[in-house]
Image (tube, rainbow, N blue to C red):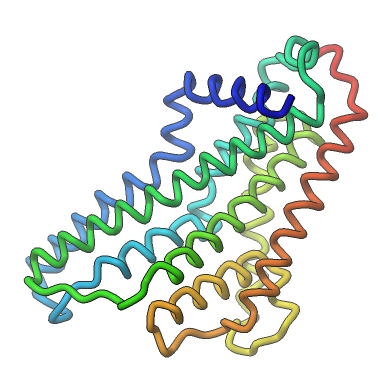
Amino acid sequence: MIGQAFGAELFKLWRNRWSLFWAFGFMPMFGLVAGLIEETSVRAYVGDLLPYANPLRYAYAGLGTTQSSLFQVFAIVGAAILFAGEYRWETWRAILLRTDRTAIMIAKLLLFALAASVSILASGAGRFLVGLYDAMLTGQADAPSEPWLGLLTGFGGALLQLMLTGALVMLVSVLSRSLMAAIVAPLVILVAIDLTAIRFRIETGELWLAALPNFAGRAIHESGLLLLGEPDAIGVHLAVPGAIAMMLWTAVLAIFAIVVFQRQDLSRE
């Protein structure tokens, strides 16, 4: 049942290519183009700031692009289309005749995970190309000896943070039944968390900070930097608690959304 629902959702999303691009494809393309322009401008006006380039570090930075709450707006739009679009276009009545409610919501969440994963990897690949361009301009490249565990850590942290965002959008979509609310409310919540967290610093190492998605994502990102050979990485002891906290938040929000969805009267939608 979930596999059939997933296939149907994938087909619908693929047919909606323009929304798919803006939600999950724009940030990778923007990172690539902006990076190429930045490297060209720096070389033209400043010259070589470093005697070598490190394309894999560029790739790692690209993997963490969507961890900023501001840049997550594109993923929020994609999640809102998945979870609130049926309310907007009043298509639940036709869909639920053939699909179990729990199965369709799990399928939508799995599809969001797939699209988010591709977007994160594409962002990393785009920045890797920027690193290669930097290496071509510099004439010398450097790379960590065993980068894969660090890169995997960076990818995992970014995906966990986006999945938490997707689950939040899922819940707001079900509660509000509004596409606009599913976009605006999660963005406001994430920005508010970021603004509130300005008064705290990850360097303090307080364990409760791992419960906040921005600090948890930062700690996982820093632990990946440590694996890539960065000796000045901070807050790495919060990485594991942060990963657990984000998985728990995602599960709680998704389960709450499914429970509410099961009880909704969708005879008019």
